[in-house]
Length: 398
Image 1 (cartoon, rainbow, N blue to C red):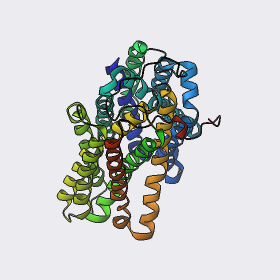
Image 2: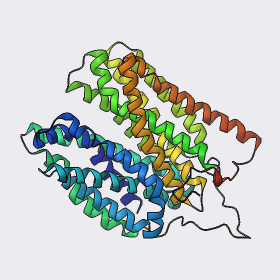
Image 3: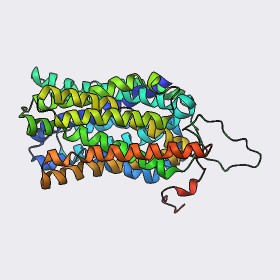
Image 4: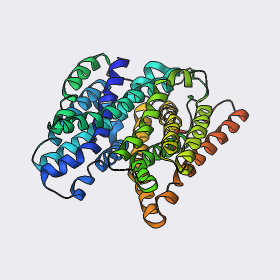
């Protein structure tokens, strides 16, 4: 079941990160301008926000097994629709792709957390390693089909269809009710949780996810432009150099088990922020292209564990309502993906990209300071106070 869940996230990573590679061919196929297709990736962020608001109710009603299997099938259908020669159908495909990916991101962490408990940060890290590796493969597959003169759909859509069918079949092993919400009962024994993954206030952990995802996607979306503007890299070289960030994330997430096991999650966040910060400043300061590329690789190594670790803390915050906690994490991710790269672009228009990119160390410093504060507070108390009432308002106002 764990392998199937990892593979499901790999399908999402392949399609989401491969989307950037097919926007150009899609634009030429439809005969529209760049603006007409540039907003397609934004639909994923909007879907995450929508799922963050209502997704827990859908998952609670339908069950985790059905939602996960439908999400994987939806990803394949979305890719098929995106390859249509009709613009309206491609738009439907982008919406289906975003919605399916959002429900996958909402339901999958709950199942992995319930199954692996104390090892949840490692499991989530390994799952995201599969996604990162798939993210690297997708642009390469699309580029290969273009190089041999084949249709871009062969590189983007064709590999996903059989994989989605196999994964959907394997996901039959997922329990349909995982971490189901229930009221606390008199006489309940407290859950035994490892340090850092105990129940607690959701809002501080939600902010950590927001900061972590903001850092990641500022580098994912704008690193290629940085190589072009700062080092004069060409249209083929710049994306290749920028992909080193994804390579670094894939390497570190593959080693998520030894890097997180036995370590307090907040200490992992501090170490990851330090590594990411060192790599970023090498990327930002070194005038040579190779040195900057090496710095971006190191930044990827550091950023890699921020999302899995902060996500595991959010899901663990409410052990009796993990559906709602995971939905709030999806809301944080969608908000970060939708706003952080946009803010960086706006600052770049005002102050140039080199100055605007200082938003990244500012976000890292904020996240590290927050983790350090929580560690110092932990020394004075045995655990975070359980206060689910600090959550973001749900659609029902609760």
